[in-house]
Amino acid sequence: VGATRKGRDARDEARLIVAFLSRMSNVFRVRALEREFDDEVRFHIEQRVHENVRLGMSADDAEKDAYARFGSVEQVKAGMREARGIRFAELLVVLMALTTVSGAMLVARRSPVYELTDGVTAPIPLTIARAEYTPQAKHAKVNGAVRVRCVVRPNGHCTDVIVVRSLDTRFGLDAEAVRTVREWRFHPGTRDGIPVSTRIDMEVRFALR
Amino acid sequence: MGQRRRKDALQGTLDLLVLRTLRRGESMHGYAIAERIQQTSADTLRVEEGSLYPALHRMEEAGWVKSEWSASDNNRRARYYRITAQGRRHFAGIESEWEQHVKAVTRVMRHA
Image 1 (cartoon, chains in turn cyan, orange):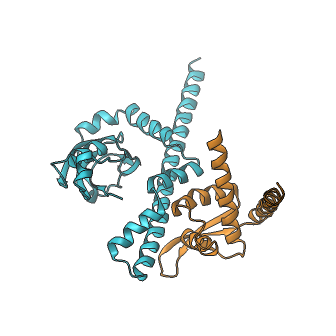
Image 2: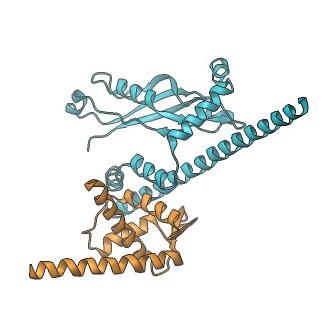
């Protein structure tokens, strides 16, 4: 009886390892695809900006026009994910389950926060909440970007969000940028393949069309 | 339901235009495909340029086009698409469907 139990345990373990590896390989595939989506979109927009400048537009107008003609970058990327059969909600659940089960989340609370220069891979945003204008800011025609700094935890959530370059404290756009970033979910940065906490800076843009 | 059908029709038209553009056998990146469609339609078909990309990725999953990364004219890394044999067969099918549809509508417009 003891021998068969041992055999079963070993098989279960093997199965767990296989499941784990296939999840990880899926994570890597998704990361590679995400990078390709970004590169493809960036190439298109840069081509358009280049062409616009050639036609005599100012750099600023050229960029604005390129984004306007392209449409929502996030929506396009969501469409590409859908086409490739990537279901991010699932992936996120897998990632969170992995970090929770291994107890990494608890450890991470106490473990160091890495800077991007420390040989860690950058976190990748998976779901991005849209920053909304406050009516007052819209009325005052505030345009520009808020630079925020946050720590992306191994579970994909942002904590310790602070504003490092303010755009507007009067009409609430700084606060809106912080609120938005707290809602974002990331595929965490990794060090030697293991999810870690990373400190990153991001820009939340506000542009009136 | 109505919205779903409209989305399907829009996707179908986009597939037709993209495959028509690639039919000559050239490899083209998304930007060039968008430019070609806009130019040949004299700017009447102006979809948001970004909407081309989900379509291209869907079409690659379906096996109608194949993509690869290579250097562009200005030496940037770009994703180039080319039509496959399966894509040509699919195009022939949807092209004749489209022609029949146009003929039918034209008849109604003339005689109704």
